[in-house]
Length: 119
Image (cartoon, rainbow, N blue to C red):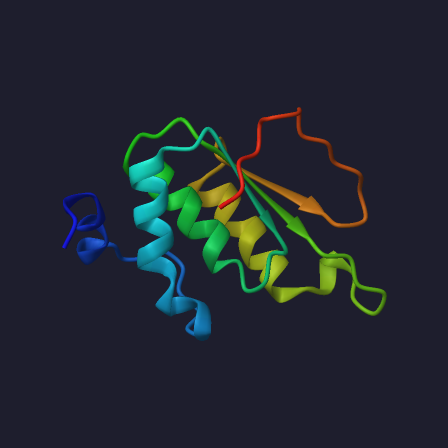
């Protein structure tokens, strides 16, 4: 086992909704803890667990990261009616107000060239 990937054993997400993403949360935690990215962009919010794991890891490890999640726009559901969006907004206000940025997919967003690395 590589030492840089031993951190996840103690990781407990603040917000846990079960679902398939739960299996990847320790991996996402380890990636952020070891790579220490300045900007993390999640394309598609899903159940918000990935985005909130990024935020929690950055906060717990004092990493100067900004985490942005872009909600995919859907014709049949407004962001105000999306329970996962509401959960992410509540968690952002309560736990990660200086780290998390939530972007509704209907708005335009630009990140400066080279500011986003892809894995």
